[in-house]
Length: 68
Image 1: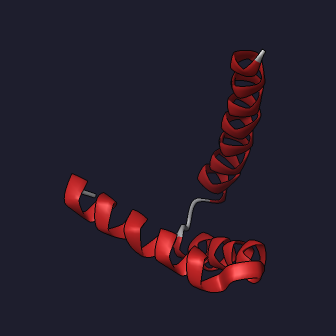
Image 2: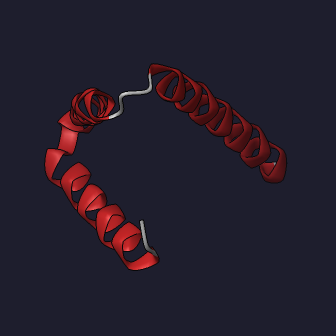
Image 3: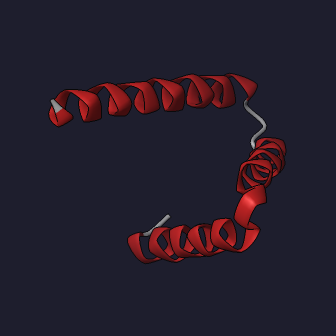
């Protein structure tokens, strides 16, 4: 994906999350399930799921450290 496509996709995602409002968590779960069906490599999906969680936890840890 080229940079402008990534930017356009990110913008569309951000707008959709905003439109989902209080149901944004459900929307993201449904979106993830749909995107998983497009990826034939289950191992890659599992690796991405785990690395994204690791990224989130690391971000929370670094954010907490910088707030001190």
